[in-house]
Image (tube, rainbow, N blue to C red; front, top):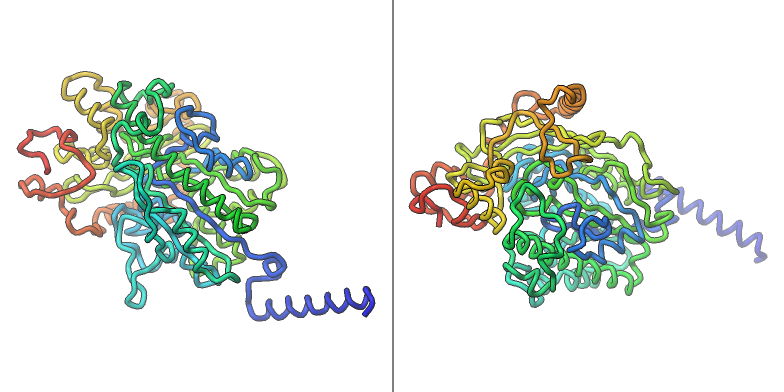
Length: 538
């Protein structure tokens, strides 16, 4: 057979294969010619945007794993979660929907509605092998399908353990668990694996950043002005940094594992966090430190001109449609109905530039009920928008305590040395400003120029100079929320306060606690209470 006849014969066979696969409704021509990519989704637990060293904004944290992904891929500077709390943020990632579109899953510690399919479940139904290590979607109850617990993030791989360097760090050997997953999967199937590090979630081993991370208190150049700058707070920050570096340590090892096995070339690696650091006025609230999160994406030999900085706004609801897009799936084929987010595959495939899609010029934010501690299990509803260098937020129930009630320990803020320092200063009548910013009641509207005021210290909502800016942002936010059928915007927001907690022991916490019932919570300290010792929870 001469060369010409051989080429014609090969072309005919290829065309027949492609026609047959298309007729059978398989993945599609473009994905048969090129293998579907693997996906490694890496999500830290409570890490703020500013603290990945690739951004160059923090000298006291070193994250070479994240930095490699950014250097060999793309570094996103405007990635935001719609909700800065673990479970609702992760629900947004998994479903491609905003928290106000997720019914009970828009709350923390909720029952995950059966109607919302996750991208991990969808990929598993369409030829991918899926699994996770560490923390998946949590806390809450995932529900059941056919009498079996739903695997919202795939099959669990948490059996391998290691010696943790501190009492606060998980003993889960994340890298060994990924290796076990790779060995167990079918070689002819693509995979999607979720690395959910438990770090840098609290509790921390106090002083571990200095003692084991070999850091110095003087390494910290700026303590956010909404806290108090002293030795305890700086130690707390360095302990956080040490745990964040541990998350990154396993990320590095995972990249090496995939590279050694020859699978890194065709793996989309995504690295981010679920919400900001677990400190007062950050985790669970809506400010720049809270919702603005790190994001780097690597896809070797596919991303053109790696090392670019991307200025497009990206929301966590964009991950699910991106992964479906990468897998060659359309929304109608995925059982994931009415996805709100938009795929960022056009950014990943861009030839050059830092601003790829000018229409990506804003993101929406929101919160409902998170941790316990208010009367009648009430939340603190907020909606917000970030655009043109401003963040505007509307506090729908400004009469409520944003961090939870004082008498139950401000339970929407994790117990910590930093929290204790602020509350002790408040009790002593000193440095009232940090207490007001972290725990005090807030006005109905807030507006901050986050370029000039990155710590959101100066509320411009009442300044007539900024009235047009405020009204423009408010109008756009409310119109989009109405279009998205947000119950809060439609006057039906009380429904979020009536979804039951998945953990029965914390329901009606406020009423039971005030009656003297001893309730173990686990995420607050005795120093968090501004009531007599006789009223403090155990």
